[in-house]
Length: 587
Image: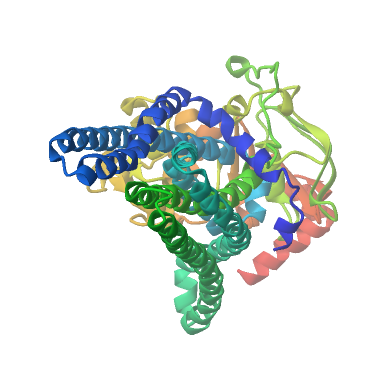
């Protein structure tokens, strides 16, 4: 795995440091779980010693009267072990789930703060995989817990201490045997981590293909792409299964090694210990105790290897999640923001030498210079790819200009908060996206508007009658992406959204394209009232709809090539006139 090869040796430490802020929030719970370790480990380690004392004492002498005290002590130690183990497990799980929830929330908040440029490059399916599967894998690490590993290490040290005190030579035999076993386990865990990274990447690709086909199901079926897309999905699925098989192979190898190591370790004890017992170098009780200690030694070692396997998977998840957290937030609010005069809004827009390049070699807008006066209605016109929508994204600060600056009422938009800017500039897009919830909440979009104000905005935009015809009116539940509404109905709700906010500047991006002629006439009448005294930028491919605007800006390949009203541009006989005549000819 190339990525893993270039990772520095202290990469895992750096990854763990990223989790420290989340772990600190739960330090009291972790501290309480760690405080139980001495009692838990001692209760477990003393049990073989009690068995040895019972065998070499009352049982060996035939005096069973003294056996009862060992039975009671053994029962008490088992009860202490069970209770403390349950409490510790509960505490670790509780803290782990809270940490996972905190990380998930932190990631979601960061993703919502990223610019549109990031989402244009990152497939949605891959992003969702990281926010779900990778976070869940990280949750397994917390649930398994560093506390669990510390507990196992502590148990190993306590058991080795008891074994060394009981018989140093037998303890040394087991310790030497663990050296090659540890080396093999570390080797397979390294291979497991590389395989896990590959499997996660393939799972991301699989989800990306799945998400793309579900969203484009109508196109898939209309163009009979089912077989072809199914084959493509099968290829990605097979790559994922192949990568997953590798993780299963290495995980199974580690489990098999530990099972084999435990059996061989006990066999070595029986051999050397049996010889010692036969020549009376050790008692039979010591041999039995050592076998029990061996089981208690290999159990935490086995658990540690299993947990480290989970940790390797977790480290992979942290690497992938860190790639999201390290993604810079390009569009930030200023530390000392200026304010747009909402109560005395004018709505003047100025572009000063504005250029935009999504990539270094991909310039979209070039040195734009224009001013839209307060209350002016301006249309943006040009061929597909001329940069019309890019101007809207810049004005709304979904992107930052590569060069130049944009002013609203004399204030640089980078010097005001995004919330204030987007209250000042209302945008109605061609595709009115709807969220799950009722109609009223989709108009308010989380802002505190009264039901009366929401209904008043809908009436002003002539869309109240459509809403009243819905099954529950404003309380009608909207399914995912508004699938129970038509494209035109979704667009009507977008107009109500803009009306309830009543912004000084309104941007219409092919806003009436999804409406029929009658509905468009009704909405256009309401729009004229809404736009009265307000600045408007209109993008429309049907040039007949913008004949009456104050000014038309004509774009070509990201440059402003013509401007004027309809009559002036027709007299110039340039690009606008050519586009207009073509549309008339087509009509």
